[in-house]
Image (cartoon, protein in one colour):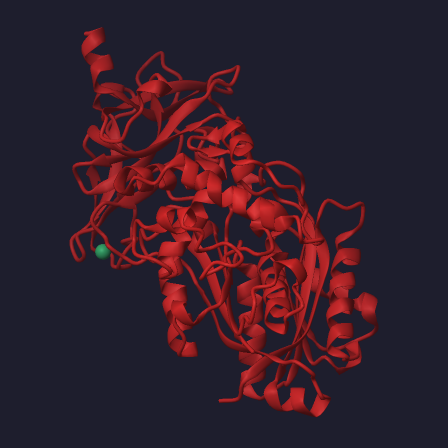
Length: 381
Length: 149
Ligand SMILES: [Zn+2]
């Protein structure tokens, strides 16, 4: 089975811009092609990850780069859209039918909470069940009850990620907040506070993906191997992320992060201890604590200890969200995972500047959202 | 279902309730129980949400349960929210019922009293909507009932 590698990565900063989605997407795609030293006319298939954009957005964006007749498809899997799109590119290259593809993630979103009718039924909206942070908060409350996780530990995750963002010019917020400021910010849904959740925004990121052989022929200087790219949805009652209306008290299915991560570990032959840095779905600060456990960085219930001990800081044993995470970057849904991969490619190339994890050789990106959609990608240099 | 002199009542969602909507005292949440895998889920269904088999039958879910987890929604939910105006923070939680199912529900009580393990009971209620009576639901504290009787 031939290796699939990333030979180019490009990003348009995440934030709020007075630009069309076509401009945002085309800028990221052009940057990735430039980085790869590849012409648009050489690309054999393109995949757009997006959730909020209209039909045929991929074609509308990429036509700006010049006339083409290749297959361009739009892919949607909620917060895991980018993983689903990258996976399609990997499968296509691995099949041997093509050997050079573009993966683009792009989103332009309205301010405020996401349009609930996209994921909730009318009755859930009427009864007040349409606020996404409510679901994250209920998970947090139960974790606090079962394991003694504290509001202070949750705030420490937000503190770490905001602090990391100061060195990321592509983040929407690049501002450090003190632990006290975070704990004094208003509650959105107990126990989650305003400075502990991410906001929807605009952004785009792109990758040029090739077979290892094609990368050699192209003389790619620093190809990054995609060791695994897995996408799953939550099994029955395995995650009450929106829009669950009931959960089983008897079923005992592993959560979507465990399932996707275990698939990725198995396929790559790597485990959590082999991975030098992580970008994960910190939709809210608590979520990151839970993901430490689901990815196997620590045992169930010990996520709070990990943040207390500084294990997940840049310079710690298992740095998480060097980019500042979604809390700082915002979540332009379709661009989110592709943006994580752009960050991890720069970590593995050793070009992440003040965010650099020294000597990083293996990296993992993780996203998780509505429907229990989860993607885990493992990269290797 | 409709008694004389009453406007037609409709459930906030089809298949959500069991019992006659004309008599709220006899209304419960409806569940779907599967004889193949034993799982129960909220609402009437024709296929099991777990194993996909047709071996499901509708049951009436118990009206008493305990709070498994919760939050206080302090920001107005987006979209067509039909709670009390002006908006006031409210409890939202998963209520564990004896049938082995945890149901997402608004919790009508003083938000400072919310805690995991709190005993609760089912509370269907009526809401006027475009001249129709809509049956919606919440859970409330057991002691509220005792206090009112
Ligand atoms: Zn079944």
